[in-house]
Amino acid sequence: MKVAVLGASGRAGSEITKELAARGHEVLAIARNPDAIPAQSGVTVRAGDASKPDELADLIRGSDAVISALHFDVPAATLLGALRAAGVHRLLVTGGAASLEIAPGQRVIDTPSFPAEWKPIAEAGIAFLDDIRSERDIDWVFFSPAALLFEGPRLGHYRLGDDRLVTDENGESKISFADYAIAMVDELERKAHSRERFTAAY
Image (cartoon, one colour):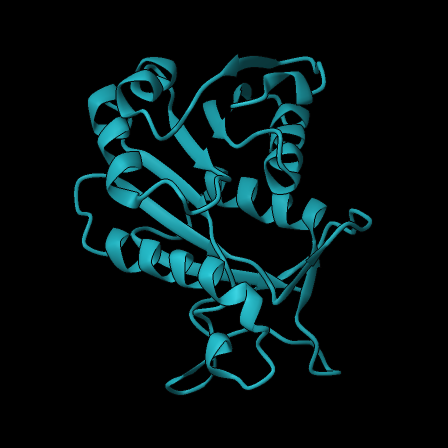
């Protein structure tokens, strides 16, 4: 597939780009700072600003799918508008864990231990998910990671969930960026979810 990755210079975006290229996909890696993206076989690097939908539409036109690893300073409506203008009908979004439930009606962000300084970013991600849920033309998925997303080894395994935080036998919820990237590219290839959120953790 021809896949455009937005935010390809970031931690999640760079791992997703690497995983796509390793599986033989044709990757268009887009970032505001393209110099931060290392040269890789099968990867074309372009400078781009996702907050400018006309510019983004020109870049992603002809792609089979777009994977957004952007921060949530770009609204869902802006991103969806660029995909529509480009004629791209599939969007996969790297989301956040804050809106996952730890019990019915209780989200991660609602817990007393959730750091106050993280709330503005988390709330932006929740707003993005709320906005994208009403989208019916573009086939989207919102991939929430585990509570802890960390730099670590590529183990090659994970467990899937939907709106509930996935935890291990010790009550921990974690996954490395490398294995998060595996789960994202697996979703791209298998298309197990459509217009819904899912999550993954060890």
